[in-house]
Amino acid sequence: MLVNAKDMLDKARDGRYAVGQFNINNLEWTKAILLTAQEQQSPVILGVSEGAGKYMAGFKTVAQMVKAMIEELNITVPVALHLDHGTYEGCYKCIEAGFSSIMFDGSHYPIEENVAKTKELVEVCAQKGLSLEAEVGSIGGEEDGVIGMGECADPNECKAIADLGVDMLAAGIGNIHGKYPANWPGLSFETLAAVKEKTGDMPLVLHGGTGIPEDMIKKAISLGVAKINVNTECQLAFADATRKYIEAGKDLAGKGFDPRKLLAPGTEAIKETVRAKMELFGSVGKA
Ligand SMILES: [Zn+2]
Image (cartoon, rainbow, N blue to C red; front, side, top):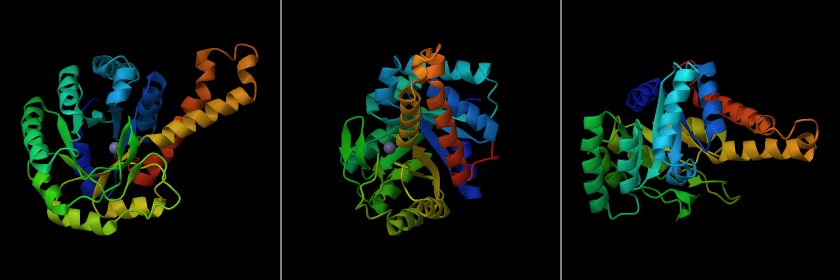
């Protein structure tokens, strides 16, 4: 069932596990993630970037597809449909389209403007029953053409935003979107602990979950991270399985060119990736 992310994240924070946000790109992605969540009895968050929303013919198309799929596939675990790194305008589009959760990424605004816009969205989301994620300290790497440097958030700014009444907070702790470079110094647990200290009960969000070593993921969860975003890892798994299928010449044999066959190995690879992440994050059986 489609719900906002508040309850599932409060439970995750209290239970010391994290709920995975898996970004979707098309029907196969969505179906693979929903079926795996149901099979694993795990709550799940479907992330949609503005670019992916555009690719899928708009946020309305996405919301209708997800709602219909939840119904037709009998998905009973809690599912949140969440705008990932939303612009101010994108947030309003998703609220109108029927998303259950949004992230307002105001990290590139001066803190005063981030505060003002977040405050406004807190009120709108509360009225409409959506959950809201805010970001402080830009997260490194490239996502939809936006490049950040992997800053560490200022814990006082985190408190200022958390106090506005958002439901979850993404704080930069040296994490990066996409693949991590070989010389990456790792997560800043000092920053994470300082943010936790200042923000109290606020469920914290870790972006850029692809390629962070498992022990760091577990430590981050123990320090208050209740939501972890995974995007690149599913993309790599899908591409790898699809390449193997084609390199083996399977698309040339019989009806191997049928898209339902051609996309099947990649879809299975997404399921395996999601399953492994749910186990690592500890969300299996928590629906
Ligand atoms: Zn992100």
